[in-house]
Image 1 (tube, rainbow, N blue to C red):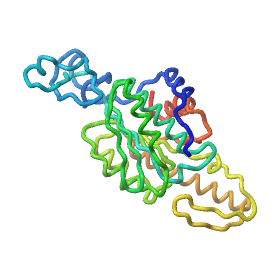
Image 2: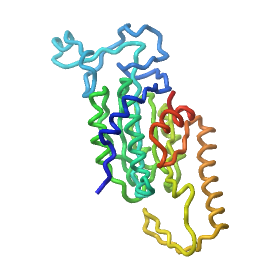
Image 3: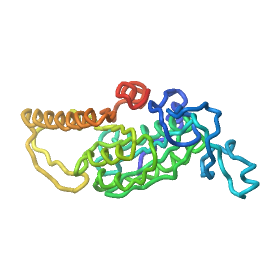
Image 4: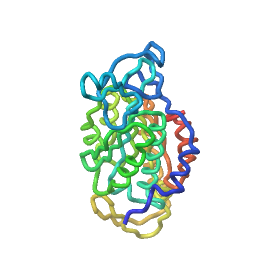
Length: 291
């Protein structure tokens, strides 16, 4: 039975986290984000057909009377960003104390809440194997319960190919894409990031490890079991081996950091035993994911 993630205490904390998403977008509709387009926030631009989650106050009833369809008004300067949040649903995320997936879901929940509160459109994406489980894109704080329902319905099993799955995402127009994962994925993450950037996304990687992975407390003869493939390895844990592991983990993280720096992608590495508030208000801010 999965552990409860979004309890009353967590939901109460959301109102105390007041931050702004960092990107100024030039495309999108409605919303509360300043674009680079010329014009004032009240300068009319165009109509588009109403979709679920749109602010009903923007419906043009005169257009409805003429066409028998609901349309919403678009304005030149106030724009929404489309925020895609990708959550790694591999079995390796179901590890640690606290488990990495619980921490990841809480972070996804906070990011969704902040985006909806900013009148941005949010789409949640569970990455499982080489496939995506996608939520309906929603906007407005009243849609948050729908986001929680989607996140609580995700299962964390098997392997995940982040590259293959994310490249299946049909993205139109500029937006923000945040990937939450331990990045223990065959093939890495580089192809997915390059694809998202080609699709004009502002990309951020949220790298979650457990404290057991960062500082393993092992000694003597142990059997290690790959949680995704089931493969077992018998090893003798010595101080020399632990040092080799430490260097390998540092090299893995350094490679991600170097790639992100080269591509202009925000990156943050977190431990699943840290508080969500610290991650959002300090680590996310320092890394440039939010401000």
